[in-house]
Image: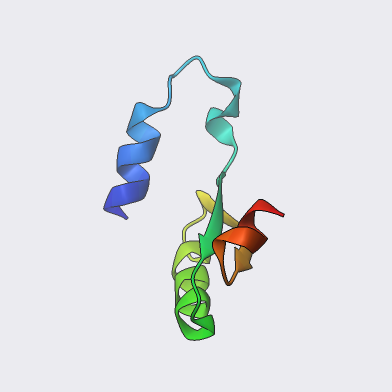
Length: 61
């Protein structure tokens, strides 16, 4: 995944969180899109979907 590689490339080598997966919050009003994004991201061992919500208000709760 190009985006993941780009993000990981920006993480500093001395950072102790380098070995931890990147936690992602998915926000979309479509349950179908949230599901597809979740499945796609969960297939990458360097990503963890922390949560999936339907709008910005819920993402801040």
